[in-house]
Structures are given as structure tokens and as C-alpha cells.
Image 1 (tube, rainbow, N blue to C red):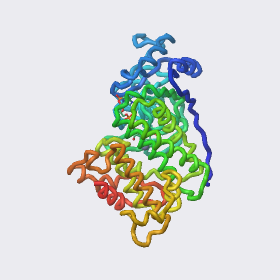
Image 2 (tube, rainbow, N blue to C red):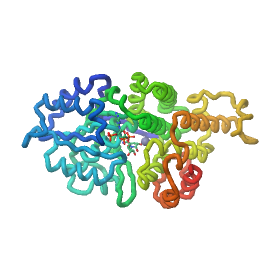
Image 3 (cartoon, rainbow, N blue to C red):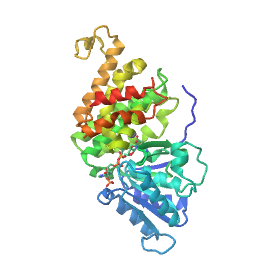
Image 4 (cartoon, protein in one colour):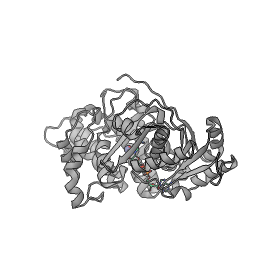
Length: 413
Ligand code: NZQ
Ligand code: ZN
């Protein structure tokens, strides 16, 4: 195992009614000075009850949108999916001008990421994007605390220090994980997720699976506690995904998915691992150029990427086929259409596992090609430039080159 230190500074309260019960004591514990800012997206939070629940707690505590000075509620709405650097800067200026002492993000990953980045920029004199996202400098300044009320399980942003922003001018989408940016609290009421459109349920759940796979498919290859946990999480997530797709109102499945999103990204399954995330790097740049949906982009890329690299991590891919997909009889696979002459048992198992993943993507109604993702001839012309702009992961079984990324994109067409 690699050396590691592990921490997760976020206090999580999970379950029905947690906002009404826990938000007030949490705010009292933080004792913020000045105003409280609430961040949200395009309006879904006003339909699923999350916004009303937060506002009613704040109003009981004496906060209001019309107060002139102290204890004001500052609204920062309209945070878009794939949040931009410009939107983050707008929020940081609003927080600074209104003496904001606490930010509450209400929404999915985009809202949480944008608010976490605002919390890092608001009291920072220089350019946070340049210093932290681009240069990765240590974060030592005092940041505005940020708490999350989650309405969409996907990114796990509620329990880590990661925030992903898109610089629209340079067309760079970049993530950074600073422990200082871990939310001070995460309130997770699964009922809020019931209003999610099925498209977001599919995309968000695939993103969770992607986070686990990107971590699992990295060194070391031998069995270890983090990967044992990952295998269990993947089996459970696939079960709950199928249950939620067949009955989107299945609150048990929705609750399980919500907590799995956090378990996948609270860094516990990353302990002692090298971490690949090349599929994420390739998706982030597709998104930077086209604003495509994150989980859907990952669904297109994963099987193709894995067909490129499985031989470099063969024992892990074979273990995945056995322990996650339940495929054990390699001999029986020799008659399958994907079997090629001379393939070893481990290769057959690995390929069969990747086939199962493709099948799940089709079954769930996720896109399997860039065309299904909405790409046309204009986007196709951009692929060489997008491939050149991707970050290359150092934690993968084998680093891919920009040329190979282009091949992967073309095979995804
Ligand atoms: O904007 P609103 O109206 O809130 O609608 C949102 C949005 O349209 C809607 N939604 C959320 N909760 C809902 C709901 N609609 C109805 N009912 C609800 N309960 O869903 C849409 C998508 O929301 P968004 O927050 O964009 O999705 P997601 O959570 O997938 O976040 C995507 C962003 O997170 C980044 C992605 O790159 C992308 O920018 N990521 C962040 C990570 C992190 N912080 O650790 C890691 C990830 O790998 C990822 O890169
Ligand atoms: Zn992701």
C-alpha cells in the first residue's frame, strides 16, 4: 500500500427531517459573524422542499432577506451545471461585499462546488483560481465556512474538499481537493432527491460508480482493505441503481445511493491507492469544450478506456469481474463473441466484466457514444484539440498519451 494520511472534516447528518432538526444547532456551533449566504442552482430546490426548510430555520434564528445589516440572508442563485469561474467570482464578490460568515450550498455537485470555491476566494486577496486550481499552492488562509444541503447524489462533493470549475476563456475544467474546503457540515435528506429527473438519476449514479472504479483500478494490484470496500460499494450501487430505475420513488434505493455517493468520495476508498481518474480527465475537457453532462460523458468513455488499459491491470480487472459482476467460469466465456483466440482466463474475465459494464449503461438508458451524447460534426472537429488539452493521470495503470486519448474519443464516436 502507498503511504497515506486520511481525514474528513465534514460532519454528516443523514435522514428524513435532518435539515429542520440539525441546521440550527450546526449554525450555533459555527457562530458565524455577519450574514449567511445561500447558494442554489436553477430553481429545483424550490420544488423539493430544501430551500423552504433552510429558509424557515434561518428565519426562526432571526435571519432575513430584508435586514439592512447583521443577520441578513444573501441569495446567490442561478449556479449552472458545470459551474464557471465567472460565476464563482460573482459569488465571491457578493460574499465579500455583504460580510458573509457562512455559506450554505443547497443542490447538487455544481452548486456545492461553486459555493466551496466561493468560500476559498471570498477572503483571499489574490486570484484563487490561479493560485490553487492552476498552481496547486498550499491553502493557508482563513476561508469562509461552507455547509451543504444535498439534493442530488453524485459527486460526493458534500464530504470532500474538491471543487470543479470551468474557465470558459481558457477552456480548462479543473478540480482541486483541499482539506480546508471540506464542507463544515453535510445535511442529507433523501426525500429531496425524489424530484430528480430520471436523466439526472442515471447520470448521477453512473458518476458514483465511476468514482469507485477510477479508484479501484489503480495500484496496488493486490487485495487491500480499500478495494475490498470498493467491491462491496459497487455491488450495492448496481443493485440500488436497478431498483431506483425500476421504481424512481423507491426511497430505500435512493437513500442507499445517496450515502454511497458520499462513501465513494470521502477519501476512505482512496487510502493506500494511487488513483487513476483518467476517464474524469478526459470527460472534464469534453465538458469544458461542449458543456456536456458529467455522468453521461463518463458513461460513454469508461468501457472504451478500459478496453485500452485492462491488460496493464489485468489481475484487478479479473477480480472485478469475479467479485462485482459474479463472473467466475472463464472457460464458458470462450464461446462468447468478444473472446479471441489465445486469450488467457484472466483476459476473458476482464473483457467479460467490461461487457457487463457496457450492458448496464445500455440497460440504464445512458448514452454509449459521443453522438448519443449530442455531439455533431462541429464537436467532432474539436476532438484533436480537446485531446491535447487533457490532464494526464499519473495514478493510472498506464499513462495514456494525447494521441491515445484522441483514439479513445474516436472509438467513442
Ligand atoms: O440547477 P437546479 O435547478 O438545481 O437543477 C439541477 C441541475 O439541472 C438538477 N437537480 C439537482 N437536484 C435536483 C435536481 N432537479 C430536481 N430535483 C432535485 N432534487 O440536476 C441538474 C444537475 O445538477 P448538477 O449539480 O450539475 O449535477 P452533479 O451533482 O452531477 O454535479 C456536476 C458537477 O460536479 C462536478 C462535475 O464535473 C460537474 O461540474 N464534479 C464534482 C466533483 C467533486 N466536487 O468532488 C467530482 C466529480 O467527479 C465531478 O467532476
Ligand atoms: Zn465524477
